[in-house]
Amino acid sequence: MTREKLIAALEAATEGARELDEAIALLQGWTFTKMKGDRNPYWRKPNETAWYMRAPGAPSFTTSLDVALMLVPEGWQWEGRMIHIRIDNEIENSKRKFACGIGPELPAGDKYFFESEDAAYRHADCPGCNPAGPQKLGTPISQISGRPGHPGYEEFKRIARSWGYD
Image (cartoon, helix red, strand yellow):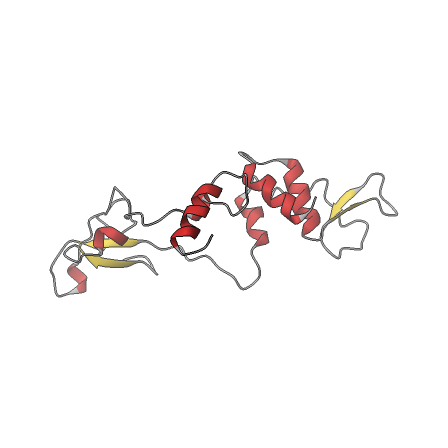
C-alpha cells in the first residue's frame, strides 16, 4: 500500500484495523519474512536480522496509544497543559483561586488568565474553569481535506477562496 493510500485509509477508518497496522509497519521499515530457523513468517523491527528476534503480529498502531507513540520521532514531545481562569484579586500567589477549584499551585506548564481579562473565556480550555470550552475560531483541520471528492474538500475550497486562491 502506498503512503497516499494508507493516509486515505486511515482518514476513512472508524476504528483500528490489523490491515492498517500491517501497512503502517511496512512503511516504517518492519519486515514480514520467514528466516532460517523460522517455521512461519514473522514480523521484525526495522534492520533486525536475528531470526529469533520476532513478533507474531505487527504492532497495534491503530488500537493502542502506547504503540502509536512509537511513531513520534525521537526528540519530539507533546505538551499537555491547560489554561485556567483565575477568579480572585489577591496580590499573593499563595492565595490565588481558580474557577475549577485547583490551586493555589497549578500543574507544571499550566497557565491562566484573570477572569476580568477579555481573553479568559476565549482561551481557557480547563473544563472546570470554562465548561463551554474555549471559543472556536475557524474550522478544525480535522474537518477539511485538500483532496477532491473527500469529505471536507468543499470547506477547504471555501477557505482557499477567502485567501484569494482558486
